[in-house]
Image (cartoon, rainbow, N blue to C red):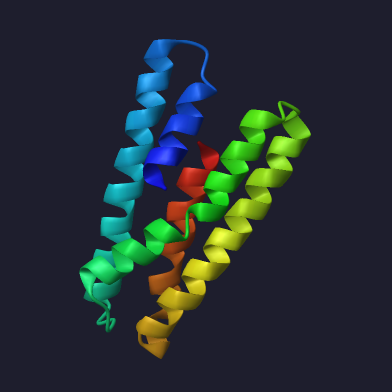
Length: 125
């Protein structure tokens, strides 16, 4: 999914230099961001495996991949905004539901906020 998102975003850029930068940024944000979100959950004494959390966060970017694909096909700016907002809401809802169950009750906000921030960064691209 990370590869598909990187390719789709790089295809929408103006020149090859920006395409390479977009592709690299997708990989950096997805892998480093999911690692940081997972490390945060572990430090909050969440009951989760590192690789399990990274996989779930990676699979939950699927709605954003769909939004990128539809944005690539339909070049209307207001439709792009709608696609990204729907994809962001779907991705965040799926991930927050998963992560909130793994973090202790008194630390849910601290465990869920980085997930939201992670998907905001990906959606912004």
